[in-house]
Length: 307
Image 1 (cartoon, rainbow, N blue to C red):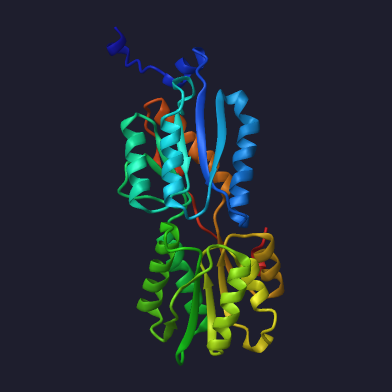
Image 2 (cartoon, rainbow, N blue to C red; image 1 turned 90 degrees about the vertical axis):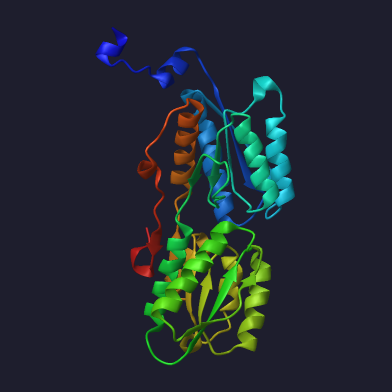
């Protein structure tokens, strides 16, 4: 009879009826850069709302760019008391063998895992929540080429947080691909890494502009943008390089208004957190989800369209 009428059990409703509590953990880098603070703020907001949704969320913080610390944190969550075992874990990935191995151990234990913001493709993670970073880099390359225009050689500096982060590597690869394909007159300087630290970014970029006064463009593909803006303060307006950065923060918003930054590519942290929770709930219930519905888009902001 059940087969005849096509009955499909609603696992979410069944779990609600049983009073199931979904225990989720977000493992986030203990970083002071604006985007990571915003991401943490959105998770904290989800914690406030979680009681009504039968969800319990907690945050575990690890040092940024520290693969062994991240792997250890993931393993510790797996070894916790049985009655506190997570129903799912989300984490900002550092692309390293020990992290991949820790994710594999979680998967073998039956714990769903979602990489957040920075991906770990080819690993045992269940899903990635974040923008297409290669496409973001290509978009930045296209914008840089259009702003600089065709003509003689143009020198462009690139600043990253760390090449240990796949999102930063993919943005760089996309940027290089776009520039190389469509704007061969643009010459890219070797990447400088500021570890998403504003004072370091200011120091490195200031020194680079002294060494290369011909710099016509700067692509900041990570954080540290307060330092980027400060490094431009002594540059005369007529010599100011074209600047493309990531994430709409107080610093980049002000810089867009003032004209020291030309374009900002951004991602919506609130949307990413909500999507991650939906995916973790689906995976905890053994259910599928529609990948396209959880796609995170890339926002492009100029001075003219600031929200």
